Length: 96
Image (cartoon, rainbow, N blue to C red; front, side, top):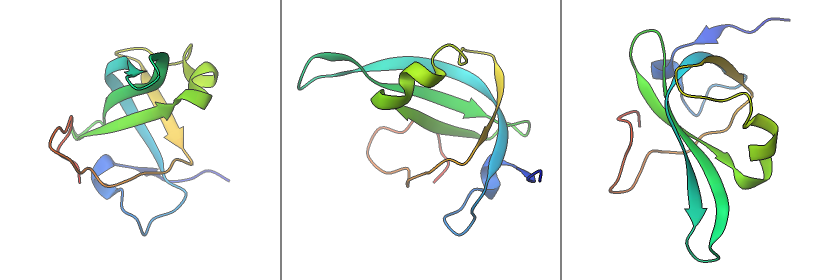
């Protein structure tokens, strides 16, 4: 069964089984400043074909699984992902 491809602007808490096709605009690793462990997470800014952007994170326990598949300017399909509200004073994207 194939799932419908969604746009970033279509992502909402009420929607399950989302799949998006995006380009990795920017990718960087974050260090855990409390324990000085590297990497703590893998952060990305993703953009869909309409130009909408969203921030994405891969937690430390899953970096090994996706690190080799992810690079800047690569187009990827992402499905079965969780999300949280874009809150805080520093935001890498405008999507809520």
